Amino acid sequence: MTLRSLQLFVERLGAHTCLTEEERLVLLSLPTSIYQVSTEQALVQPNEPVQSSCIVLRGILAGTSNIQDGERQITSFYVPGDMPDLHTLLRPKANFGLRAICSSDIARVPHAALLEAMRRFAGISEAFARELVREGDVRSEWVVNLGKRTAKQRIAHLFCEMAVRTKMDKETHTEFPFPVTQAVLADATGLSTVHVNRSIQALRHEGLLSFVRGTAQIPDWKALAKAADFDRGYLEVSAPMRRLTLAPSEGLLVEQEPSVW
Amino acid sequence: MTLRSLQLFVERLGAHTCLTEEERLVLLSLPTSIYQVSTEQALVQPNEPVQSSCIVLRGILAGTSNIQDGERQITSFYVPGDMPDLHTLLRPKANFGLRAICSSDIARVPHAALLEAMRRFAGISEAFARELVREGDVRSEWVVNLGKRTAKQRIAHLFCEMAVRTKMDKETHTEFPFPVTQAVLADATGLSTVHVNRSIQALRHEGLLSFVRGTAQIPDWKALAKAADFDRGYLEVSAPMRRLTLAPSEGLLVEQEPSVW
DNA sequence: CGTAGACTTGACCTGCGTCAACGTGTGTGG
DNA sequence: CCACACACGTTGACGCAGGTCAAGTCTACG
Image 1 (cartoon, rainbow over the protein chains, first blue to last red):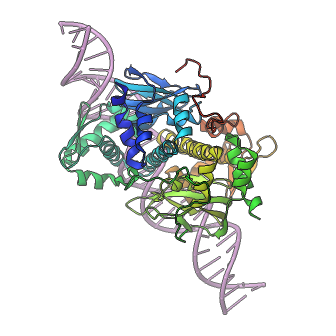
Image 2 (cartoon, helix red, strand yellow):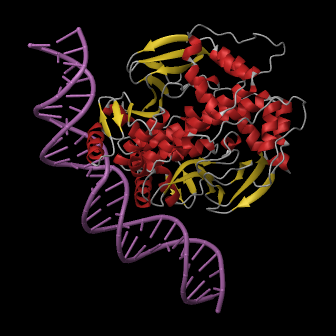
């Protein structure tokens, strides 16, 4: 049932944006078609216009860019609840690809339905826009990761990010599934697979991280976060907010704005 | 006069989003305060909430992140017409900083006014959202740049990007101003200043790029773009579009959607 | 039980960082 | 008008993080 499958997606939006009951219901009852995609299958090709966006239900997708010599760089990961090609709503011709990293389930939602929902509900527009911002923040951290951190730090940081994004409860669990190969980690961190391998081993010897066949273990969260220079702040908003509302009485209604610029 | 100063900003939005005359006028007459900021001056600090967003009128700003050991990574540049902290509209607590790279002029616009404009005009909301997408695309290219390209390519790619973004007309000009130091280029490309220096020299010897005291010269655009693996597609939309419109007759009005997913 | 994809290891190489010194231009104050 | 300072650019020597190549080993799965 689709009401069930989009639950996680709506929770994701609700975490940063106040949605009315009606808006939640509209989102939950968006028309979807469910697909199962297999490892390395492409969902969106660069420069090929799309008419629908997808929502990850299970598995992991990755945004990928190919460069001249056949190598690829992964520019972001998407986990269940994410909408990886939200941006095609506004720019139907994507300029990077989207592919499954492991066998995954996705829901496809026609752009028409999403646009209609945005038109009618300010909260939905706002939630989508805030998702775009969040994605931008994540990518910004990736730039820092690739630009300024060592191999071990890059890998550690990526695992921290994924742990938080897959909602690993660090109080009660030290494990979370991250079904990727070392080659994929290499494509994401801008390293060679050989060096990824050695770096993971080094992290294991330091007791910071173990990663065996698609499941990660973080024995000491604080130690790993410190080593990775990881601060989860960029992934979260303290409380869901709402800034856009259809002013009931059309007019110059604005929020109070203290005079700090 | 502020009508004049926001011209470039509105053109930027108009390049990707169809705006009505009224929307243009609303944007042009947004309340602004004009400031001059000097080199290295911070405009937004991480985790410090802001109540207004700024528009670059002259000069260059940069998004910056600091890491543990006092080094910084620049995650994006902003040129006249850009709105670097548009995202704070939706997430007032930024998680990276914004500072001037050279002496610059900016216009500050209160969030309240921007939110009000978004509330009342669907085209303005859409234009802002599309700007967020564009920024995401640029950052995505930066990830590729840092992850998979050599020093010379990174620098070449950055100059290509800036040439296009500052609208260098490559038919008639081979020069454009890019008032940054080599140290700033190093912070942006994830390289050391020494290596930036040597790489620029190498590019000059190959006849691809010269960069002297803040002005860049690209004698052979095609050659540079090829060396940098640069494709300007990610910076542009073929024609301005409009996907969100207040449906005049409320209802299930949607665009035609061919059955491609 | 064989094959293919993932992981591992070792040897070697190189792009880039680091350090430290030295030019070169530009603005400032005497 | 000079001299000094300071920020920026340049150069050389050296070291190391991480790439590359090539040869295994392990594991899952048919």
